Length: 257
Image 1 (cartoon, rainbow, N blue to C red):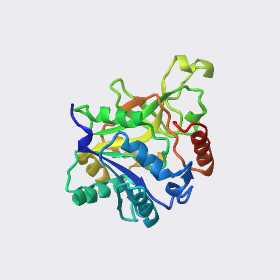
Image 2: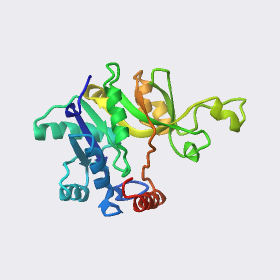
Image 3: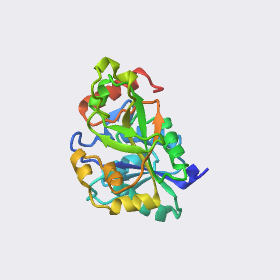
Image 4: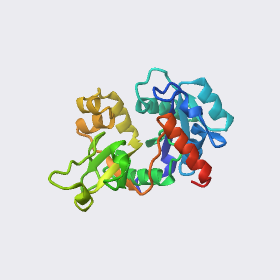
């Protein structure tokens, strides 16, 4: 086994100024804030966990429920660079080193333990220093038109990520596509070795990344490899008020979800 959870730091980037839903980490879902839901679910799998935020309101809320939290710079362009700063500060604060970082989205209040376990399984591969998770999905599922898709090779390494439905099936009727091709929806959770995370953050943004607005393409475009763990459990990120209403309904209907 290449790694144990004691060598992994889970980082939950959480910023207040989201462009589509301001202050979403502090939105109440059931009897908890969104960030608390994410933290408690991640903490079921990971023994080392910290929220990385640039906002004192989020910082105070995490402290209120006795979570680990650290303040980071306000000028990060993405959650990945915020993860690196959080790792460096938190490691120094608790005087502990880590071999791997798991980047957990702060807007996934229904984060499933299997997403984390599949990611950890990928990092146990001696060839993997960058990993993510995907959901096998029916081609007729409307989520394929709304979420990020990926294609992978036979060794479970990503070939490409896109906001379009990929692969494109030529000369096949829609009703026959399921018999011809497997589709995968990307679940936005990542694992990196410390070296890979530092290298990724040092790379300039790439043309494919800028075209699709998907930062993982920077790694592929620079010749890197991303191992993909396959889960059977869907992801429910909250980007809009409509997403938030749907999540609140799901939790109200099923408290054990």
